[in-house]
Length: 322
Length: 296
Image (tube, rainbow over all chains, first blue to last red; front, top):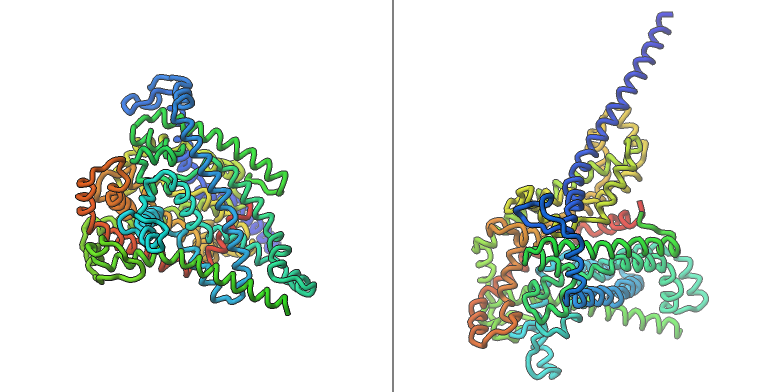
């Protein structure tokens, strides 16, 4: 009898222990999450609230709350300023070119890499093409400027030796060369790394498909086009849609560094995009409210694009962002 | 027979194209090395393509003697180590918390965190916040605002969710608390995801130049990349100025003569740590990227 009682007790004890354990677990888990929640409140949600200065005449002394309301004054100013057309045109042109011109490179690279059967060569090609992704834009812009420099830059030297040009060209401060340089450098930096998702998708293709194709007498090129390429179509579609969502992100570090922070006004006509404009207006000229209004304009358009692309993605590929 | 020939030709073409592509990637780096190993006055004469003409170690000696560069390198190392450590620790603990089914309000926490990925206050409100928090001109401006990454959190979380349930349960039965389970069980078996996210975060910290440029005016606190950016802009200023008179441009060019070789050497030194680390972590980050691309 006693032992049964004892047993019951111990079950009770255990239940109690478990219950205590449960709330202890909950407490531990909450203590892991709550600091992050507070952190995000301060570093993400407070700046979100700070957007109201776009509708105010903010200055440092009066602070955010005491600054007078001005409504849509700064939005009107941006939309009617001559800079609006220039900045929007550059933003859309640069991001569209980056998307359209840059998009095929990782795909072609992944398709080509798939034909390399020697693992050593394959690894070498991958390691080398990933390298620029890990380099800073500061170093890359420095390299580009050194290669293209008018006094002794290797590009000028080589072209002169080949007789293509008679005298050195000032590549980095001639507006018509800016877009090719910017977009070319961007592709050079990222095509290898961007190919990773395609390479992974290709590695999942059933080898029997190739065998069947081979028996039918298809050449490797044909196999590439009828087996490999269709296998990565879903990845291509998803990547394309995601890129559409960020059509207003024309770039920032790359543009700023390749133009030396837009010190050259002639170059600015072709290089100033929304983000560099916000930086210049806000931090260089300290027009905080105006710059915030411009930034908010961009965010609103971006979020609209994001929602639309997400809908498109859900319809076409069954993949959504949230 | 014909088919085999065309396949061979295709492979040959692909090898040739990829080799050429790799050369275009290697050449700029090679050029950097060559110029940094050539004397500054000789480089200015131009014509250096594949090999140093007047070989010298002088530029590297100058780099390691230059107090500005050495101070900046120290800041870079500190910000990379502390910034990466703080972010990975803080983010992975949060991710472990939200990966557990027992967590109450889990859905709310996730939505709250995911929202920060898609909307942000932007440059100016963030700048005002940093100023209000008195982080301007302090080392902590590199660490504190970058202490949490929602992207990394999502990757950590989806990795933790795929860990075998039984492993965590057995730790619980042995009486281990959540923190103990996380540090003693979860972290050791999550090597690949930690390796790739530490790599990406560290590279971001090492390569970051913007914080140093906008939040720091004290030259003793700027990292290597910000300093390099200053040196490079000074070098190219002559070419980028709207209108420079001939003599002024010449004078500027003369002054920046040595600093051009110096900056080339510094650029290469800055790149070495990255070249030495990422190839060894390649197999991890390929996996890490895949976890990230799978929708959570």
